[in-house]
Length: 116
Image (cartoon, rainbow, N blue to C red):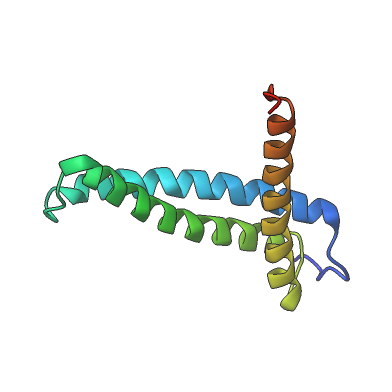
């Protein structure tokens, strides 16, 4: 049995964020695949990518469930209990958003800019 953690460690948040990204990706793929097969019988119009948009919408919604589930599972396995699970999940999400914003900022700063 895992003893409850006295405090939430940053390394646990990083592991939870990575697991959340993997869970999001796997569940997005599975959800979009199932939705793409279900779009025909549900009479979703194929005009202008309607079926693809439907499949990705369902995939993203299922992906969010995968993210939350993976983060919850990792935090619980690491001994985090109670309110700290929610705090760790929010911290993992914020870590992903900050990392993505930093990557976009670095990419943008490396692009050639035309002086006006």
